[in-house]
Amino acid sequence: MSNNQSPYHYVRPEVLPLLTGGKLFSEGAKAPTRASFAQTVIELGATNPDIVVLDADVSKSIGTNQFGVKFPERHFNFGIAEQNMFAAAAGMATTGLVPFACTYAVFASLRALDMVRNSIHYPNLNVKIAASHSGITPGPDGVTHQGQEDMTIMRAIANSTVIAPADPDTTVLAVRAAAAYEGPVYLSFTRDPVPQVFGPDYPFEIGKAVTVRDGTDVTIIAMRDLTAHALVAAAHLAETGIEARVIDCPTLKPLDEEIVLRAARETGAIVTAENNVYFGGLGSAVAELLVENNPIPMQRIGVRDTFAESGPYLDLLDKYGLSYGHIEKAAQDVIARK
Amino acid sequence: MANVPMSVEELKQMAATIRCDIIEMICTAEAGHPGGSLSATDIVTALYFRLMRIDPENPRWPERDRFILSKGHACPVWYAALAERGFFDKSHLGTLRRLGSILQGHPDMNKVPGIDMTAGSLGQGLSAGIGMALAGKLQKKDYHVWVVVGDGESQEGAIWEAAMSAAKWKLDNITAILDRNNLQNDWHVDELMPIEPVADKWRAFGWHVVEIDGHDMDAIVPALEEARERTGGPTLILARTVKGKGVSYMENVCEWHGKAPCQEEADQALDEIRRCSCEQ
Image 1 (cartoon, each protein chain N blue to C red):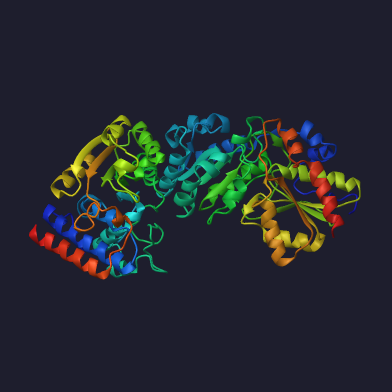
Image 2: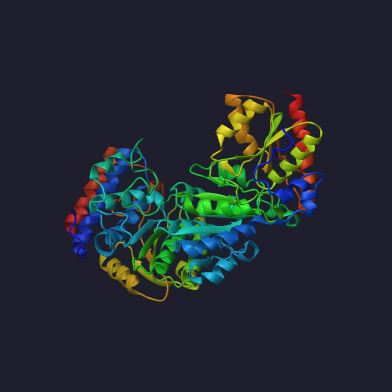
């Protein structure tokens, strides 16, 4: 790689100097992606009168109470009744409305899963499921509020499209794309602030992953809040002479198979990184694809077969094996297996 | 094509026709749920042939009234009513539950013209109806949403989440009809998991409750008409019904919840329904 050509794509220039030594997480600009969602759905509501927002008593947390302030006739707070909310969203969608039904990931993917499967996905209705607190991002809240299985669960449902944007600005793009898409979409957001990594030129498209760092020794495929960690890991690996390709994979389903298979071909080793249980999600999706096409050395970063606990977000990532340091180690290990 | 809206006498004849369709469908399919289909027949017949503003030529007409069979397993009655009303050819009725059929074991809104909501997993249809009713208010459409709920289904907590919300939003464009046949898959509702005092429960949840004999067409029609006209909040019609109504050996017999009659049993059932219909 020539010195005057950056290997990074769509990464904000001010982020580049912060990629080493963990400075991105201490010094970089941060925001929770749930806030970007709320801001975007309000923006969309201003131009599309069919957009309605449904809440289940966490609108103040997600920020969708502000949609209610601007468009009170299009905001429906169902109270603590997620099952009713999701089935009602399905009914609304049959009339041509575009409901965004908002709650936390545990409640969307578990408490109301029967409604989400049978009333939304089976009839393929145009409901957007907006799930904050995905993964172990609601650090201090503890296990009951940490949606560490939502990617796995939602991926298993037919007709599902599953999106987990990496940072605040790509969240804006993801929410706009979901609104324009006809059919059910599960959108996953973070409760805790995550670094602002990408610029407005990020080419978000449903079903497309994006190469955000070039490299030929190994590929790190990451999603949601772990993409930032993958970029930091890649910067550290570069200091040791390892050039890691980094792919941000905001759409878990449908998986961008082409970009994964190309990375397998061109780099010969893959690490996946997700803030989700390490079975059934991104790591599994990539492994399933590789095992049938090009079984190369691979390693998965994700929450192991355990519940987490309360604690500061970054400390939890460290304790449960999801931080950039774990990704670096996995990359070194997988290269050794080539 | 049926001549609608029908008189009460015509509705009684159509109900008998639909009961025969149900028996023939389930007998041919060798599977299905006759008991709860027969208990809901008179209500569904009154809705499709008297009350509802619908167009079989345009099943997704945006201004149409909506119907949801929240107790989706009773879909033979829905399929028969739609076929008799002209939404699709009656020849489909013989394909119930077969591979490739539009008539799934539980109703699929994307396969069958006239099915307004997929159903089957209990406790969801009333919520879906509330979504439609909220949309009707928001979009200033004057359609009415009709939802048939089972009494066993009322054991699902989500029914009560839905009940609470319809009252909160004062939805007078939705009517729920409780098919109170007192039998569920395993046993009698009142013994397995009692729901009484069910009228008081609905009233306590903010609904206007009307109790009727769910097989008396002279009572069903005015109750539905009044529910449609009432303003200020939702109405529940508590329809006291008999599971397996019209077939002597099925009436109030738990086993006929989800069992198909053999040909001999079906012949007897058809004979009884037709004889009863002639005597009216």
